[in-house]
Length: 454
Ligand SMILES: [Ca+2]
Image 1 (cartoon, rainbow, N blue to C red):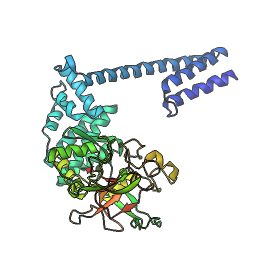
Image 2 (image 1 turned 60 degrees about the vertical axis):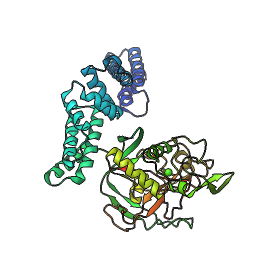
Image 3 (image 1 turned 30 degrees about the vertical axis):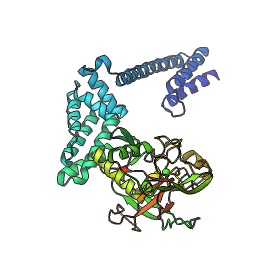
Image 4 (image 1 turned 120 degrees about the vertical axis):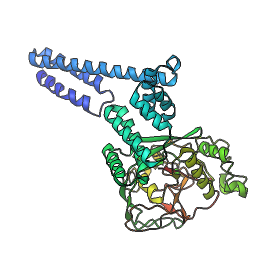
């Protein structure tokens, strides 16, 4: 019996190391292995005992390697926070710069260090990056160089280099022609970048930062054939297949009050609510027109992390124009199709978390849990692709798409200037992925926006 237990324990050890069930696979496996050693010793089975000892030795090796890597990352973290005495050391600049760019995604600080570093390849890449190339051919060359760098890296560094390569190639491809385009497309496909945490990007909007998630191209069933229960909401059907032909990046969160404030400080923009001298908000237990209400004063307790509300059509257009100029990227509102595709994150259920509305409170702020106000972005769980607050908190402005049936890539259309809101807000019931409202009223405290970048 004990022999069988020892043999069974030996079988479980590798499963434990490789499995996802344990949070500490190596220590757990080591404990199992030592139990197997004990059992094998008790039945005096020399073969089993030798095997159990060999396994324990391997696990000790694994633990040492894990500790060494942990130590290395700890010292890189410490150096990244305080370069101190190492500031002029080319070796330290190369190591810490690479860590900052490829692991932490802090490109601004990391590139300056790489440019002073001892690694010639990374130094050349950093110089190309710091030149901020705007021509498609130069952007593609930079993407190809990062892809080549990725083949020399491993682990998190490899993922970071691949994500950077994909980012430059996606920007370049629309402006390329002929063989260069084919080559860029081939390299991009070979990177196999997927939606989610690996493809995250942070842009600096002149002092404040905005995080984006990479959204891969693909098809999905947009809308719903179900009868909608509220007469004021628009038709969500017919459900139809829509193809999103080009990758894009979507804001991880709604645009915050702090980000909007940076835009206003830089441009002196005056919103429609400020010009009109009133906004709609919730006060004294009532949803009502409030004199003087605008994005600055929706609630005295609001912080820069709350979503920007009371932002009208002009405000969000001007914000996108400013953000595009600051980041040298195309930043705009999502089309409805892009919004719903990203919201669904590969799901076909009513909500991205399934069909059970009782789970809504884990993912969004609606009138059931909001306390009649918005909440700082990102407090609720994200969807499968890492986007927060797609349901509730504030409604989000989108470009409307008027086509139907099969579509390659609905673009909304600059000329039509038609807006639509998605996702519901803190004042409303739990909105689902297909819910839409095409008559956004002005100056509402529960309407905000989210942007996409190319
Ligand atoms: Ca929202």
